[in-house]
Length: 117
Image 1: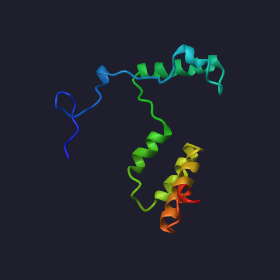
Image 2: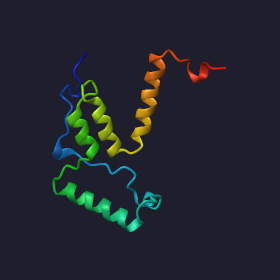
Image 3: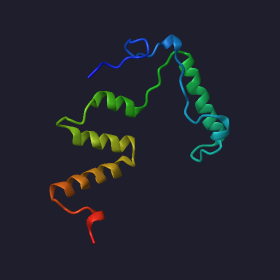
């Protein structure tokens, strides 16, 4: 397996002197589609985030930090990590339940729903 490289054959890294932060879906026209916060508050949050980035801060979210610490699901405490992720992403519990059910179906040789008559 080859090492990832950019177009110059060098290791792909982000150059802080030549980088931009993308605020996904933070265009003014899309702010009004957000129903969780008032429009003015969403705009204020986006402005504050842009200002801290301009000041040199590297924003990180909780999920990124957890992923960096965890590194792999192939570990003895994987079940405990699932509990952490359900706190970060409440709907993640549904994905975990679906995965556990799929494992149970495979282990018990149950027929798939699509194979039932």
